[in-house]
Length: 271
Image (cartoon, rainbow, N blue to C red; front, top):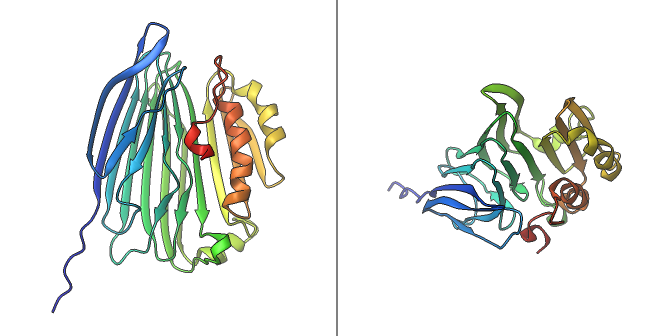
């Protein structure tokens, strides 16, 4: 007898914002399959908490998200909790994210941590297209197994690619490919130095240079920040586990999120 094919999760979410006077409002919204969203009140923009109701990612899952911050608006996307990539019986889970920010807009992409489990197979692709004067804050935290649970990753496939374009020209590209024994790979000094978690932060905007020194002051010895262009700030952080990583990310992202209203990170990050 052949085993019955397991059902796979499929989901899509499309969300756009627009400026309405001095505030931002939802312009368009559509979900499909396992992708849902909640909308907490936010004074300085539209905030959406993206929810994957399938409970995690495994081989064969297909998720897509398309977010657009319309001209002069602000759109903040986050997640309800950490996303989990579980063991795959066959195939890869694929997640595609497309972000756009029109002229004068700001897009904050602030997902909570991705936790990789033993046997996971995950491919992610994120592309952001920005207008010449648009701003963006992006973070991608990853945890290599839960340290408190004694998890060790000996067989994992993780492929991740981030592209940021501005005015149709490439601005920032980053690609990561880790397969096999991640525990051994992260132990290497030139890769992770024994870290169990990491994060990448990118800020695009004219304030980037002024944010460099305050951000560096909030990073541990295992983190660093640089201006790759006068208005592009990039930081990378390594930590022993997810808890230590979050201790760094909370104040750092609060500083980068803050605006004239004093609002920082989405509330879901603090629950």
